Amino acid sequence: MTENTLDPSLAVVILAAGQGTRMRSALPKVLHRIGGRPLVGHVLDTARDLAPAHVVVVVRHERDQVAEAVLGVSPEVVVVDQDEVAGTGRAVEIALSALPDFDGDVLVLSGDVPLLDADTLAAVVGAHRAAASAATLLSAVVDEPTGYGRVLRDADGGVARIVEQKDATDDEAAVREINAGVYVFAARELRTRLPLLRTDNAQGEKYLTDVIGLLRADDRAVAASVVADVSVTLGVNDRAQLAEAGRLLNARTVRRWQLAGVTIQDPATTWIDVTATLAPDVTVLPNTHILRATTVETGAIVGPDTTLEDCEVGEGAVVRRTDATLAVIGAGATVGPFAYLRPGTQLAARGKIGTFVETKNSTIGEGSKVPHLSYIGDTTIGRGVNLGAGAITANYDDIAKHRTEIGDEVHSGSHNVFVAPVRIGDGAKTGAGAVIRKDVPPGALALSVTPQRNVEGWVENHRPGTEAAAAAARARSAQKADDGAQEQGD
Image 1 (cartoon, helix red, strand yellow):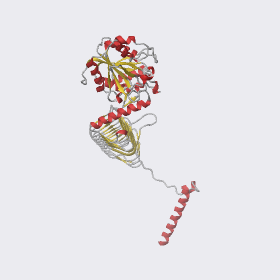
Image 2: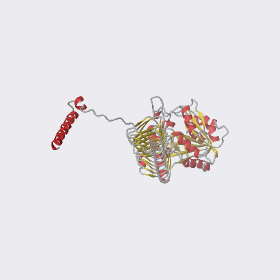
Image 3: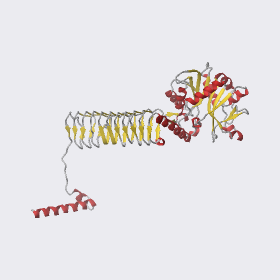
Image 4: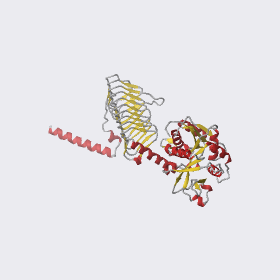
């Protein structure tokens, strides 16, 4: 199926109404995230790749929260509400009511099966159409089928029906071919069977799977397509399965970037969201997370031990042992190790944010450096600036935040505090230990100097009996002896 070419004969129904009690979570199951998207978001992405004429999502549990998430990913979809009648059959019946004039093929997907890809689904739709079947389902053969519906075949190998785990006999439960929860139905055949579904089963629900038996009872053709890679059919029902789905998705994502020219040194400890973008010749070192909408340009090196969330990393930049969110790192810039870039940080080309530096809502100009042990918040720094170790922009006065402005080619001494609001002019210098409370004119040297005062004998007088007092007394005696010897020599 050609990407982005509308298929007017295809509608996709996504089932996202369940609570997911086994997740043991206040968050609806389909909104738990892997790879930077909620589970249902991955299903919506795959549906979009098929270019169907319609996408309908059925919601119920925490309906507003799920609907908001769905429309945030795919605002073009139709969201419908399941009523008090439980079951997948009822959900699809309600979805079809939103498409009263549609007479093509209906692809039914589950919002908690995130790993299905468009190629697999396109193959199922293609097989369904080629055989002119009333229904085609996707199945898988697994070693441990517990928890899944079983596909029961007739003597000729055709699909006879599907039996759910709780309704299966011992012989039926021993069948290893499972229903993957993906179906393609001819819409006209589906419409006439859904009203016939009953709730006299272990769950008291209208099972969509019972449509298969009804079709076979009417001698309609039902096919099953056995998927080659069982992992794509993995459903998420609990936290263990969520983690496994996340691992499989990440392995797929990492491999895709490796084949696109990205060096990933340790795939097992590298996590890349599906929403992130990496250019060829990027290098990713171990224990690195590249999350959400982060982009990394050609030649950049990221890691080890780095987390980037919604960041932009420029060409040839190096980011080591850093935690950064909503930050922009320019071409050829260096960050870390042990740096913390909070939202609003913008480091220009060839700039540096060094060891144990925290930045927030600040712009650091081209070639400027904040090398060591500093906090830079609500600050604008010009070009060619070097801030000495221990620089702090004191941006908060207990009521409001204020900005610090540092011009071009400013060099500050170590352990400076810039008390905002304050401006340091172009080319200015500041002395070590300075507390800058007033604007500094361009080219000026700013000092905050008080005479050093030594109080002789303070330790011996105020801390008698301590090791420090004893050491001071010994040093004083030795100094007197040296002074006496020097006087005799003179």
